[in-house]
Image (cartoon, rainbow, N blue to C red):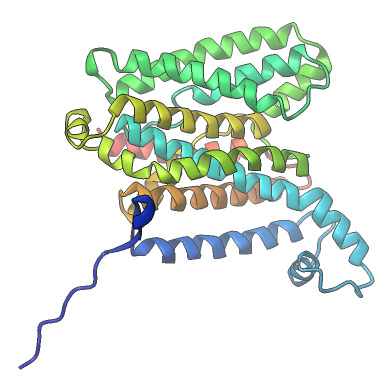
Length: 356
């Protein structure tokens, strides 16, 4: 007599009893994450190798690993890779990860599949604060910009959510309409500021507003990396709260969750991630909308696995978009924000069609 087979559990659990901590992810998460990381590394090598000064992909890997010092062109390879190309590609990955994580959190706390830092005007609020700093203060240090962008984005998010949740309503169309209205007001204020700014500062602001990682260096990487080291772990550790909030406020309160406190904390984390990305790369849209939707189909709706995989996917998407922008009209290049808009706008229309 054969014993019936026992189905394998669909979850992988990590428990630390001494500190009362547990983390549960779908079994698909490690495999999907590894696949995204492998894809990102391939695109990174191709992106580093491509340009006015082409470098063979194998030499790119050897130069990064510092195993080809005997090569006659090693000095040129090292200069091009570590000074000009690798910083912008790493920054593109970090920006994509920040925006994707921010979008995932926003969709979770609003229970709205169309929520996104760009569509809801949060990115524009951070952009307005950053442009005001760039235009009014000459030679502003890059480390100051994320703080101003954070304040502007947080104020914008507070206004939008306050209006959207009026009388308990948080429907997708209400959030979108309010976000569009706030974005229009911010855009008009920003345009007025640029009209009266110094020509050099205005030119710098316009390039920045298009959403680009062109010309970025290791200082930008370190600034954004510092913000992500603080806020991404907080996002991952509070992922369970997002699952509980998805059940509705009454159910969440019944389970013992301090709804308003957790929602406020998650909102601050989401805004901080979006603002830091906007501060170093400008307003890049649709990454925070597309990444959570795609990864939700791959690893399920549980935020413990969805958040890290979405961040990885957002980073990979922006690295790929940067490569496409450099290649499609070479020797010129499209800002990465335009490429993501070309990719994301049709997907947004598809989501609107499916949600009726």
